[in-house]
Image 1 (cartoon, rainbow, N blue to C red):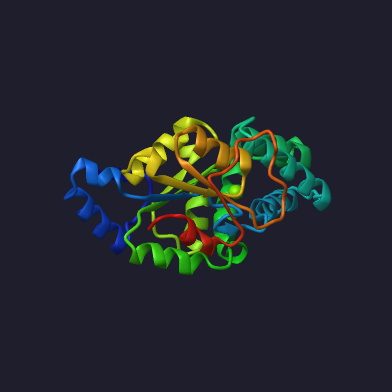
Image 2 (image 1 turned 120 degrees about the vertical axis):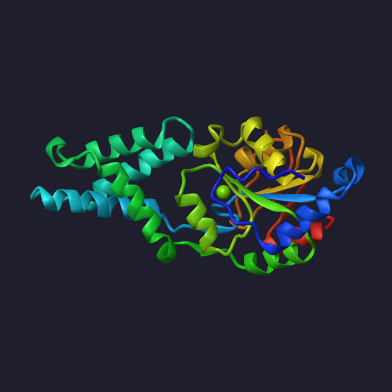
Length: 258
Ligand SMILES: [Mg+2]
């Protein structure tokens, strides 16, 4: 198997053992392997809105330097609205931040480093805000023990998503839409995941909490899809049903043939 380490990624021992075994396998044996793709946010971890707090801190610092008081509520509303647009693929992060800063501060208080400062703060704040969901650590260790390859495919920006994955002890590749140039639910994003995992699409089980981006995207790409329903939300009737539904992340192991 050929792994392309184009992203910041240090392979775990288990992954290297898996890779060595994969290289020794015939094509038919490789095709029989199972691999797992994960969404990150609200699947492996929660970030407790770290971007929102990083933005308010960045805006407040800029405001203070120019003698301008920032309205915290207005700043929250602005960044929430713009990050939603970015996450929905409606604009780049740079555009979202430009709009959010413009809605929060007078033009004279916004300098060219505002967006960069936001990014730095968000990354710095990850350890205080990001938490793994219950059972994630045990699941990842079980997958390592079973030599099952796994990777994250997540919509967002780096290095934030990579740091968030690090914060929950994730040891596999982390594919981030801003780096890939494609995003879920697009088939191109899932194709990149399949390449990194090194197995046929039909042998990839993708686990995520979003029926549209995660389940719909994975199914359209020819993968199996596990809907992680831990927040009690209804599954949209108009979407294709997931291959399986779980309510605890540990139940991945009872669904996927590892
Ligand atoms: Mg999610």
